[in-house]
Length: 417
Ligand code: GLV
Ligand code: MN
Ligand code: MN
Image (cartoon, rainbow, N blue to C red; front, side, top):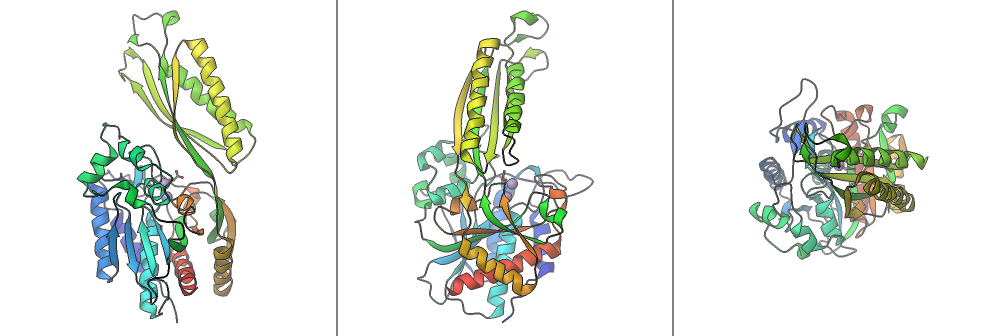
């Protein structure tokens, strides 16, 4: 029986999903901002549920808005095979990050239904809530709660930049249950496979149309608050200053230096937000809050960079008379992909004559947390210039369709086990 992906439908649906954003469009590319539980996010969710229901798939939502779209197998009591990703997008992002895994997953399920195969296991598509850390400062919110690695009370108490808690925001969006109920047991799924754009340059550079992920690097996040002393930008004399932003600038550069100093290509550190108070052009900054995102395939090496950063903080406090406090956000372990699923994927590629590359994912994904409850794997699609998290992010319809057909094929094999 043949599994036929409708490339045109998938391309059109990706384009339609990209319209669920209020952001102004650049002259080139497609800009998407879709922050969790905003109106655009809720509209996109409703649209996806409509597509799923039109196929006759069942839809369930949990207390954090993770959405479970199920095609029931002939032995529904068996653990299902799952796929999925996210639809939220960071400010001014592109239209493929996460969405390819959600709409590709839906297309794969439709193709399996259309093929007439009677699969033993149910196949389930998960739309996971807030893979991006934009609103609450922590990524993979939905999948962390599914895996039980994020405490429910801590999650509900997290606040956005307006001081609104997750508990308030999710309830206003209609997700009213307790967060404890989101967790799924280990073994709940027989397997999990996520389709995603590579978000890096290697596949395109090497002319390879598909990547099979072997492991996902370990991310960590910390928030630093630097308290100095503000004052009049004209009247406060330079020798008397405790400028929090100058201290922050030193800390940011020191972080870059220490990440480079490991000499490992897998160590990456980024300060992506820096909030300056009071934020007036003629006022010496009294306080700065910055968020550090640091990742490595080796958690011990990542921690050694953090130790060096903390040493810099102590030195800065002494030298500049500021106070620096560190807040832990997350420090995760890397995840290994299932050798069994990779072997199935290799077989599928060999049969279809698809050249592939085995590779590490340096970006994190919901798969990192799904690994706590199921054997995971990921299929990567090339993206132009390795660009992601920007409006010029692009993956070709043919590459997306190829990845989706491999996804459908592996879901079918796993569902027959
Ligand atoms: C996911 O968006 C990541 O930051 O890796
Ligand atoms: Mn992303
Ligand atoms: Mn993503």
